[in-house]
Image: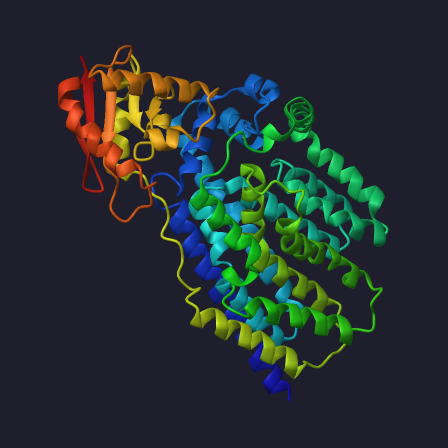
Length: 491
């Protein structure tokens, strides 16, 4: 009998190690290996780190710069390569943290439960990696802090649970997760210590929340999105909101819910602290299911739709967290065959619905092209730079004052009061007349094959390529993944 236990214990350890290795490789592939971490958002974060100072952090009403970006700025100054390295390490560490925490808790769970759950953390964590691929690292940060807070509550470290919860409020969406912790904290009688930690953790972001309150009071609904979403985007986002199995494979979502119900029914210690700890992820699941159906929620709002989108991307790991917390409280010492069968069935459904495909990443520039541009920045950043938005976003890091040109279809979705949008409209009007004034350089690049771009970008670049010879002289041509970057000195 002991031999069997040892074998299952070894299998559990091997499974956890394999899952950790898979995550380390794929997170490294999206963060450490490329010249810039994957995702267009990362270019913005690196730009903010380099060029926006402490005064901007204190007095800007915008979400960025936040305290992480300010730490980056203080640490690296205006060194571009050091700023990139900072975010490579930060992205890798923060993304891996919640995965390691969940897998660590499996060590104390019956191996026949732990093995399928460890595999599920990999299989159903693919959309979590997709968020990293998009470059939305601060969405991952507040989610990582939420997972960390739950684990700390489990181990009765209430002050530190509050502390990391306060850090999660670096992003406005983080409040949706942290609010769900409050009932649990109250029921386990940890309110004083948790709130003390929460207030300290909130300090670096407190002024941003004050600005948000005043902004909401003054601008009301405009805060959540000044323009209506394009129809295709709205339909795409809502498909996640109304079909919870989108990220699970047909039926797997409901299998996991059945496991949760069985664990509740068969556990006699309903009032135990571990059972109460599962309340927070339960509230998250309920929020995900009912938020899109509330009539008062403006689903055409950019902010609300993005929030629903993020909640559903992280939902699989939240449900796995809840199962782990319930299993910690399970008073039955022998494993339940029904639960094992259900967990195995959920894995099979996931595998057969091709959930194992990992995101390829959004890489806008290779090492050779980036360093070539960096060597030219003292020359091409003088006199004003125009660049094609979407394909040359990396120019924001090379030349911080770059003005990006977007197709009229994309420009129409931007706020009419956006300073960048106003400049873009002025330049596009000049282009119609065949000349550009007030800028010395134009950077044009076609889309890289195999990478995602807005469909309007390619024809816009092609139209610019036809005009660029009449606008100036091609001074430099740099190849990026085999695609030429044209650097034109304007007449």
